[in-house]
Amino acid sequence: MATPHIDAQPGAFADTVLMPGDPLRAQFIAETFLDDVECVNRVRNMLGFTGTYQGRRISVMGSGMGIPSCSIYAKELITEYGVARLVRVGSCGAVRDDVAVNDIVIGMGASTDSGVNRARFGGHDFAAIADFDLVRHAADAARERGTKIKIGNLFSADLFYTPNVDFFQTMKRHGILGVEMEAAGLYGVAAEFGARALTVCTVSDHILNGEALDAQARQTGFAEMMAITLEGLLRDDRETSR
Ligand SMILES: O=P(O)(O)O[C@H]1O[C@H](CO)[C@@H](O)[C@H]1O
Ligand SMILES: O=c1cc[nH]c(=O)[nH]1
Image 1: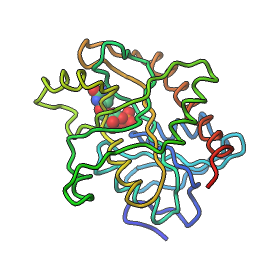
Image 2: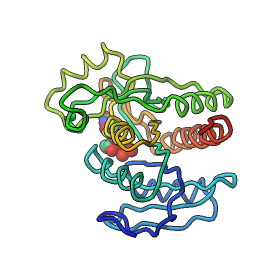
Image 3: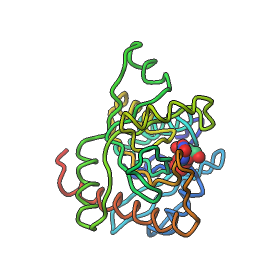
């Protein structure tokens, strides 16, 4: 079985897929955090891997940048490979004064300037939200690790280089925790096709004050995000009845 974008065999993906935007970050995650790793997709270099974390089968695959790319992979993973949990592990920019580079934020919801969810929801506004239990278990994992995180609303932008820079102030006033490019689309796909989804991001830059992580700090913050995400998933396995 293959889709236009994934040439993996049936059963090649675990029921849970981590999705960073960057396929090389997918490879890094697989090689750094998983055991017994096998590469399961190379189409368009959108690398996908399956391995284990503490004995639990987990896959990781790049989503590409932006809602259209992420939506293609998420949809095919759910409907063709039986994936039931998708967790975006990404980077985002901050606009609030109390959100700093290296902070970890969880997208309980995701606002957007994209039209995809209206397209799938009869032209109406769709509340793009994460799965509550995935949010809860990631939050519990963070608390147990003693890591402070923020949970709230992300903004999934169609344009990385937006001409409407004044809108960042509006986002700030509305409490947006981070600006990224996929979460609202991922949540819409998950809702349409009956999967559970979550987004966890590390703040890589502050859009309004110009602060940005150096490479070393990026790596450290990223490792903590991965630990929270993976431990949250193990909790979800233990505590959520399906
Ligand atoms: O670091 P990733 O996961 O790619 O996420 C962010 O980085 C990319 C933009 O540079 C977009 O994909 C955005 O959502
Ligand atoms: O999409 C993104 C990701 C990181 N930083 C931003 O400003 N935007």
